[in-house]
Length: 351
Ligand code: SF4
Figure 1 (spheres, rainbow, N blue to C red):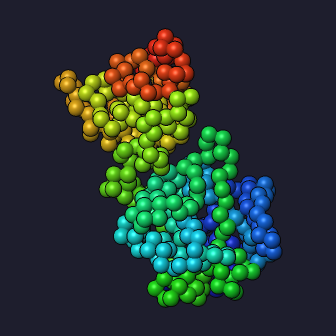
Figure 2: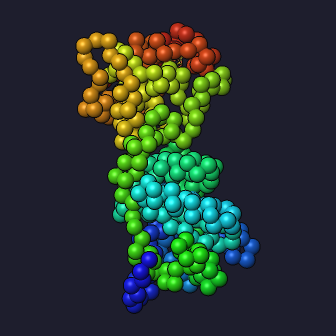
């Protein structure tokens, strides 16, 4: 990387730092450099907070997730072997995205991806990062942000220690390193930051589409389908068997209602609207309508998803002709309520 050194004021540096390591504005994390004890500080992230970090007085940890958006993603490789973060950077480059290695404060490396101004959907960022980690054979590596959105009772998410903590920079820690030059720190970290390439959301969309990451939808959820859920109750984080079957097999009739029902489940699971639409568009390709209406259109999919996301529907539509053929006696709903109330609960909410 060619360095174009220029004179920067402290204020310039704070502004540059905040362009990349930004998230929630009213809370941050920190730790005691002597004991390593971490804590959360429920105070505004001011210029003084950032300055104290850059000067090495008090570390700053950033909560990256703002609602369902993030400006950066970080992968925490917790061992000192530099080949693993280097492999991630190479893999990411093969997908057309830039990523950067930071030597972390004590052990291992962080790899950072930075996104376009205003951020991208965290669910998409996490999906792509997890996909690369799976390709590398290290699927269990820790990824920040750890959640897709601040919903379902998640108030802050998890913070990650920001780079460039002034007390550790002279030791070659918390600095960005050059994988093309023996992992030596870039000589001027500010020049380095100036030249970072941002990843636009459209690039994530391209990877998601090219590698079919939205199908099956469980890939979006970052979990495997649970074909036999607990018989006690249906976990909030899983799809009922009827929805899993509809997704896997496609449908032959009642596409509009099936689409609406699936969108309700996705909304219940906290999946962002546009990912739901993308997943349903891919699902529609599996449908083989037996009537002469043809496959449900993109406009109709969006309309059904829109209706499903407008309010919190509680019924699973168990008695609807669109859902019934996909029902299974293994579904815990059968244990939870008697068949009569299942049927009552299924009264039509279709728009
Ligand atoms: S009982 Fe209802 S929710 Fe469960 S599989 Fe059957 S239709 Fe789906």
